[in-house]
Amino acid sequence: MTFSFDTLRRWPDIEAPGLVATDAADRLILDESASARRAAGDGITVIGDAYGALTLGAAADGGRGIRVHQDALTGERALAANAERSGLGEHYRSLTLDAGLVRDARVVLMRLPRSLDALRDLAGLVAAHASPEVVVYAGGRIKHMSLAMNDVLREHFERVDVTHARQKSRVLVARGPHHGRDPLARHAEHDGMVVCAFGGAFAGTAIDIGTRFLLEHLPQAAPGGGAVIDLACGTGVIATALALRHPGIRVIACDQSAAAVASARATADANGVGDRVDVVRDDMLASQPDASAAFVAVNPPFHSGTAIHEGIAPRMFADAARVLRPGGELWAVWNSALRYRPALERIVGPTRQVARNSKFTVTASVRR
Image (cartoon, rainbow, N blue to C red; front, side, top):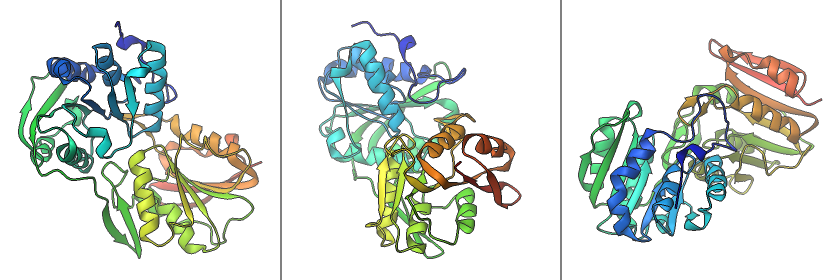
């Protein structure tokens, strides 16, 4: 079946000049794994595919029954859209990160995550449940790779080989699985709150300085008159803090990252508020009704994958404005150099500065 990388799109993720749907690392992983994939039958698993290049490239080469896990919901939806355009949608299944994803797999194609804890979780899962003959092809751009990645793979595989570099990309090839384990949430305590994180969750078990600054300045009164939402919740620190401070409210925590969602659930449970924090994997606030929320808190990311892009936060502000009822408030923390206040005024409504330090600004915007 004919397949062209040139047809791949990032949509519904941000599309802009310089933001690509595939790169040389995807091509190198497919080339290095070609003979192994032909012998693997339906035993192919793909992990960390950005927008579908690995999955659809493998399917176009004859792969069938391909099992796929992507952390980002936008990536999962982009794969589905790209698969529909290419006519390859019936040859793969999107699955959660558990034993069923890799059980008896003979070939695993993987984009290397930047987090070593995330790589440790993935390598342990494969070693625990894949075929003893499994071969893992884990690749990436050299600028995002480190020698420590080889060491992490060696914790779970007898042999790790390194391919020649091509177009600033490289592949690590791992064989001989041992000491497998399912992913585990890590725990740390901060000022009486337990933070839980699976590998790949932003900031891990730490509380990043922007979130910490927002925590210090959240409103004292409990929001009322609608839903209370922690948008781009990460490990669920803001959602859990709101539930702890205000025993009478329920909080919705949402993030597009599967690792973040699992971490936020674990954080809420560890602090005894799991029954009042509803954690949702969502593309921003797509599942929330218009004019339904009284309060939204957000610490917006400024990365799309590995690329820095300032268009993410305004999209989040617009979705928050849609979901807020008139008079509802969006509380945001942002790096002061980004100067988001004019965008907040335009998109949401009147905006006041709540706090500012040497790096961050906290604002509250009232929905018109």
